[in-house]
Amino acid sequence: MHNLQARSTVTSHLVTKRTFPIATPSLRLAEIPLHGLIRIQGDGKASKLKASIEAALGVALPLPERSTVNGTTRLVWVGPNEWLVLCALKDEETILQNLTSSLANQFAAVTLVSDARVSFLASGSEAVVFLAKGCGIDVNVAAFPVDAAVTTRFASLPAMLLRQATFEYVLYFDVSMAGFLVEWLADAAEEFEA
Image (tube, rainbow, N blue to C red; front, top):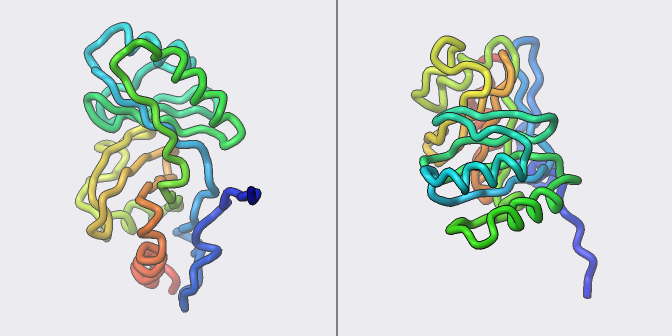
């Protein structure tokens, strides 16, 4: 059997005429290296399920369109019956096992999706202006505070948008869209490079 090595990034393997990552004084765009992503699905109204998730992760369930954090583990509300765990790659297997064990004999599913997603960090004082080019979500701090998270469309693609700090946003996409996204992000960022 061959030893397979997990990719750290996707964009480093793309053939493109664009320069990526992008770093200007007011905007930075870069791929976030591979990290753990675990999808949890179950009845969001079931108190036993909620308590089991919280016990397994050591983090409270977030309110709709929000996320909660405990150390390097973030739990994101994706929908009424779905959450996404973001964690360090080194913790992925342990968290997956804890969740699977905690949710045993409950109507729930725990799925590892790390390799199915690609994520990009948009940061800097012009990140809000840049993000407005790709989606209609108001990401100003009053409407979209730190720890806010929504599923939306960005650059006409399904995406999850998360605000992790005042000037830091993370966009998650299907990994198969990485090539298109690098081209789109680089093109949309040209005005900030002047």
